[in-house]
Length: 496
Image (cartoon, rainbow, N blue to C red; front, side, top):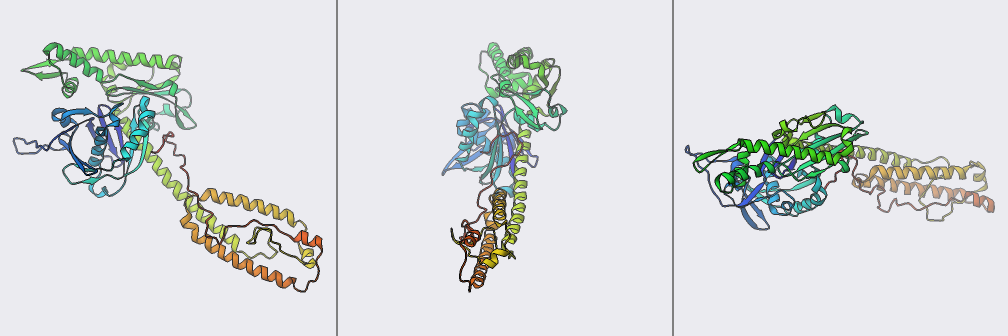
């Protein structure tokens, strides 16, 4: 099973290959067992009451995740960020998302993951976080029993690039090899900019035109907090500030406070700051950008204020999920490509092995001029009568055959890689047959040579064939190398 997770600094978005998806506020906190009871006696469940029990190395903790952590947690930790990826809070978020999406019947299977990271922090964060993730094998309980997560393959991508890959087949602009296309992902904490170019059907990222702007939807939250403190003299908590940004108002201490003017001004200022950053980043390359794609939840919030910056602009459909969907698509292609490669290679190897065995077991009508199972520097004597029947160009044929055999051996070795178990028995059987045939042939030559009293030095020199020892009959399989990773056309971001 495959799950793609967009590690947003404000919200974590996760989607599985079955289409199920969850969005969780990127915050955790220590907690205690509690119940939410309604007037009708119902218990609050789901994403608004995420109490997650984690057991690791015999140590058990109870954690609040998401909205519950913000409201009632002890010292809430906003887990995603430059330093947050080094804490167990980020791991708890990932484990929670995986547990929510994996059905009961799949809980004994390994789970493949696709993760994304802010573009500007990708090189510094991705590898370390994956190692951190793999160093834990927790048991997670959301109230339905322990689930021990087993991880399979993990792929990582930069945010923004993942969104680009996810829609590369949808928009004609991305198929055109003339000009660039830009993706601007406005997130909760930062804005990631990625510029790509279509070269030979693949999307290449240009780092010189890409980067991370350290502003995002947090700027709107800061504006609401300043206004609230100015009006009430009190400090506004993060979860309340987010609600005020979403609603435009907030009830506190007996009255409703509105922030429409402050929010409208903050949106204009943030949109202008992003546009100015893009102008400085792209410089004289801006006219060569064919289309600017706005992505991320912030692009929907700032829509009216972003218009007009570029002659050709698009806001991606379902923009908040663009990175997660791109990660899912890229990793699906990678995994399917690997499976097809294994299947094709297996078929090729079996066919080539059968041909090799057949060629080795055929008994030649003429004295053999290819490699045989002799000791190094062994001689195969010939009689003058045999010498006269030999092809006068036998040495040339021998060299040509030797070269052909070398090429064939190299081709077989390249095509096999990783299937030694399939071919081991076949190779051993072929070796035993060759040994029996060579023994029979040597006996035949010895019988033919009996009665010959002399042989000219010239005949001996022409009849001598020097061979190299082979590994047949020694138990060593020629097909023993493991196959390397093939090209999966997913942008070249590595497995972890």
